[in-house]
Image (cartoon, rainbow, N blue to C red; front, side, top):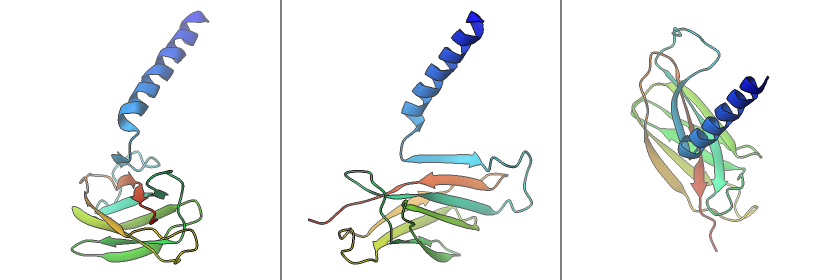
Length: 137
């Protein structure tokens, strides 16, 4: 009926407004959606995102992403869609460092790094972080 259509429109508007405020580069602290209760591996963290061109926001492939903290050092390489990901032991302060490793194949991007303070949760924390990189002239 008319009431349910109006409710859907209001819900859509609210979601659109929330997307404006919370749809930025960092969305953090959401528990892994497939689990309703605490997981046995509560000292884990899931970090993923995309490596993107800082001007065009287009995906960049073949960028080495290093995750550095007091207890772990791990590396991965971004896929053709720019995606990267880590599933690691929890540590509160981490550094994500990105380095262009394919030479000038898709242009040369300056190395960059970000320090993140990770949320501590009863659940495996999942953090999405897109890494912008600047193309050299």
